[in-house]
Every structure is written in structure tokens, then in C-alpha cells.
Image (cartoon, rainbow, N blue to C red; front, top):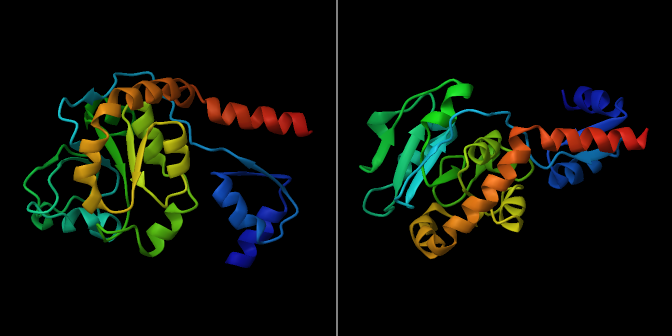
Length: 228
């Protein structure tokens, strides 16, 4: 399968990659193509914004809540991890949740989700562990652009992301939120970053304009046009 995929990629003139980390990974395959970094997925949206929680320790998790993908959720313990979770998505295993301060809001269609989001930060984390993003999901986070990052920005919500994720550099360099190495750090990190929250939110709202209008893809297409 890998040989077939590389053959198809190699037959292209241009490859629009998620980010520079993905470009570096593909460059190891010695494909004769031009690489262009998208940097962030767009999320076209002009509807009702999310509701920002006054409690800045309320963290949103949106996506597939299946234990095999988001197993870390079911490892969070009420006596160790003192923050609130605001959960959205399918396959929620309520009987396996150990944390009292977790609210499941349900699963929504993409064009209805943002209007129903409630929280202060959006979390980008994957895998079975609270200590790190391990396994195949952690490996992929090192090179991909999770769509939920664009969701959170389109919602006007600052981002908390795994420190080793490819998009952590974009989040921190643009002051859209911050990175953590372990969920065990999250409670203290939320407190220490509280004075920066409004600044993060202002930066997210500025980035939202580009994300919601297709700005990242437009920029890439202009680059390709100039290469022709």
C-alpha cells in the first residue's frame, strides 16, 4: 500500500501538506514534487459563536470519544485532575468516566457544533494516556493538522495542545493558547496562564477571520499560481 501511495504522490506536480513537519517526513521519500505547507485547515463558518465560560478551567473536548481513540478521558481521575470537561462527540462511554466534573453535551452536526460549544479552552490530545500522546495517534499528531484545532479557532476558543504536536509551534508562536507535555500539568497551567487568557482570545478572534473565510487555502493557491 505504501508503494502505491508514494507512486500516486510522486505523480503530482505539487503536494499541499498539512505543515512543515509533514513536508520533512515526505521529503525523506525523495519524491520529485514541489511541497507547499497549508499550515492550518480552514473552517468555513459564519454562524452563532461559542459560549465562553467564565470559569477558565473549563476545557472542551470535541471529536470521537471512543475509548480506543480518546482513552485518556477515561483515565482522568477526580482526585488528581481538578478541571472541568465539556464533552462533545460520538461514542461517549459514560460508565467508564471516573471524573465527576465532566459534562457530556451530545453529538452535533458540523454546522451546529460551534453554536453549542461551552468552555474556555479547546483541548487537542489523543491516545490512551494522560501522561503523553502515545502510540499511532501520538505519532500522527507529530505531523498532522487536527481538524479540531480549526474548529476551536472558528469558535473563538483558545487552544491547549500536546507540546510535541506539529501544530504546537503555530499555537504558541501566534499566542493562540499553549502547549503541555502531560494532562497532569493542565490544572496548574490553566492557573498560570489565566492572566494571558484575554490576549489569547483576541489573537484567536483575529485568526478566526482567516480560518472562517478560507484564507489558508487561498494563500496556498496563490503560491501555486505564482509557481506556474
